[in-house]
Length: 418
Ligand code: HGY
Ligand code: MN
Ligand code: MN
Image (spheres, rainbow, N blue to C red):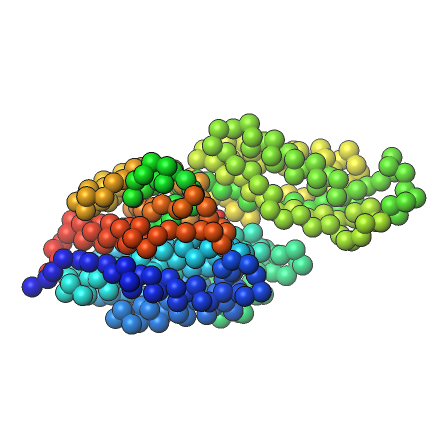
């Protein structure tokens, strides 16, 4: 006789606390950046949780941690849940983690209630969701969906090291990343629970956010090459200052994005070579991104930035080279599945609202292969990507309950739960 599904706030919090103890202590906040030992340790902890929850587990050839709770249909249809546990530098405890821990708690709650799904329930902790030092994000989910760029392994960091060269430090064989492609023809739906990372749910006072659109993202690296010269003897009119060309382009990013509603433009890294106050900068590298719900505008912004970099460079006798490491289209999430999740939330008597995600997520990548829905829970003060990031345990547990009921409804729509 199966009983009601009751996710445990205590177990959820214990898992979040356990992951919180795994961090790069040399850095502020919580830091488990992809390709570091802290990230590898955190993902092994996730795998242990999956195993303790009774799942079959493995790590695929792209570093994704995968757990499966077999359904009654025996290797038939699959329902996929997941998120990520890597963080930004100095990040928080909830970004991504809430979705991975929440998905594992759904498994535990189903088993505790003796509820068997028809579907196999697949839970994934995706590798390297956050943009890593190579400017690459959602690496694991892109590998599973077969949407990694052909040049991904060749992308270099600021020191010129290629992404493919460092993958073995995370136990990943670069020659086998392509084998991680998943057969999504078997997958009925993908659902991701995540903290909002913005202020809207808290301001509205609603418990669950249903995401209608996930922002598009275009990430770039711009290299400027000029000429190093003596800072004290070289007249301003005779300089080829790569640093000034880069600085003008940083302001162009701000100008391009400021002219468009809902658009964002950010330059996150800027390095000068040589790093010497008395040498005219020979080489400058900057990495940044544009975001917008409008894919056409993103293409326009890419063209505008490339033109602006050329203008800032040419006027100084400097060369500019702009490359795009990520071009992620905005993702409109499935109407049918959204309705099913809305019914699940209503069935629990939770308040809900629909919203746009200015944050990038693996769900945007999965949405290109399978009906996808994303549920948000409120972030205190709308803060994220910082140590102050916080969502209260009851808020996360409400999100997990909504996730569990959504799973039951999707499963029932495709068969019966026993
Ligand atoms: O960058 C983002 O939007 C996400 O947190 N990875
Ligand atoms: Mn993030
Ligand atoms: Mn995230």
